[in-house]
Each structure stands twice: as C-alpha cells, then as structure tokens.
Amino acid sequence: MFDSIRSKVVMLFVAAGLLLAPALSVAATKAELDREVKAALADLCEKTPAAKMVAEKAKAVLVFPSIVKGGLIIGGAYGDGGLVKNGEVVEYYNSVAASYGLQAGVQKFGYAMFFMTDKALEYLHKSGGWEVGVGPSIVIVDKETAAAFGKSMTSTTLKEDIYAFIFSQKGLMAGIGLQGSKITKINPK
Image 1 (tube, rainbow, N blue to C red):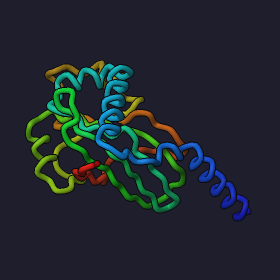
Image 2: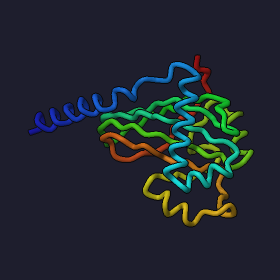
Image 3: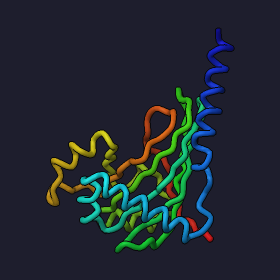
Image 4: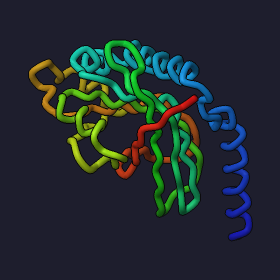
C-alpha cells in the first residue's frame, strides 16, 4: 500500500513538473523582465480593483510575476521581479524561500508588494537582503480576500507599510506564504 501511495506522489510531481515547466525559466534580460513585471502589474490592477486602488497611493510596487514553488517535505521557491516607480522598472530583485514540513507538490504564482511609506521603501533599499516578516509591516491580500478588503479600504484606512497581493496561482500545492522569503537586489543582463 505504501508503494502505491509513493508512486502516486511521484506521478503527481511528474504531472505538475510538465504543467509548470515553461514557468521554470528565468528572465534572461532586463528588457524581458521589464515586460513581464509591467504586464503582471497591469493585469493585477485590471482584475483586482483593490490592487488598483492601493497602486494609486503606493510609493512603489515590487512585482514578482512568476514564483515557482515545489517540495516534498523540504521545499523551495524562486523568482525574479522588479521595483516599479512612476510606471518604470527602476531596480531588480529575486525572491528565494525554503521550507520544511508536511508539503508535497509544485505551484506557480506571482505577487506584488505595494510600498505605502517612504520608511518601508527605504528599508528595502538599505537592507542587504530583506527577509519578509522582519522589518516593515505587511498585509497579505490573496484572491479570496481582495474583494472584501477592497470594500473596506479607503485612502484613510491604508495605514500599513506594505500590502502584498498574491495572483495567478496555478499548480498542485496547498497554501501560499511569503513569510521567510528573502528578497535580494540583483543585476540582470
């Protein structure tokens, strides 16, 4: 019976790997990453009115259009992104995370972090490698809570340092978390 379960888990990984294989490639150039970041942010704001409202008030937005996460007991996640300020990508970052525990599967998702204060943006610039969950306060808004969040949000209720929206979830892994993700500045070609 244990062999049957193990073979099903292996088949699940193979199927998920084939499903997400195109997402595993990393942006090769700044121009390609610029296009992906701007397209992901535009799509998020178009589909999620709460994100559009927050974007209008944000100092800058750090967008990771494609994070790939996978694991079997031990897991990891990786993706490249860019910081958008005044409609232009001005800096580039990667997001890396490791995890352990009861987990199995592969998943792809994106996220955008809306920096609402100068203090939070300064923390991003000054930290050599920022670990999410340490430093500025973050409110995570996923697809299910964005509608309710948007109804109660006004320019006077946006009091947190950063609002993070998770989008484009695909794959076969339960749960998404940004806690423990390490964000580091990079210099793509």
